[in-house]
Image 1 (cartoon, one colour):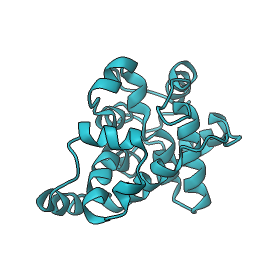
Image 2: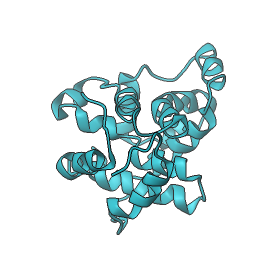
Image 3: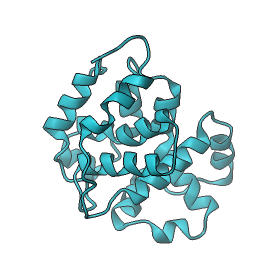
Length: 184
């Protein structure tokens, strides 16, 4: 997998692979759009809205069958692929959103019960709930609270009704938080 070098690369990836089933009744693209819209509704920073939009981009690099059978570490793959384009405020919540699910399963007694079956299945592949030591280590990481916020958006962004948005609705915001002059 190569690092993405401009906004066109991201748009192309979502155009070609964003129609893949998310396993939750929505496509990868629609899930991304719903999560970003939810972040905007909650007045999140532009960096966190972009993180919400792109948090599952790592799934788009994985073979669909392989991703269903094993933990594809999509959060790490996605954060790495975005490394040339975005700073830590976008990439770290993406890299930590799976850990945030594991954390919430330990810290919030109701959280696991509210997870969809697909999220429960993936949790098992991702190592299950954190133990106390893992949770403490997570709390020491930069952007851990942003990752919790992103995780909750991820859980909510699986509605069957369409957002009515398109990827282009977030292009200006993505450009505004890009680093190093990596334009379109």
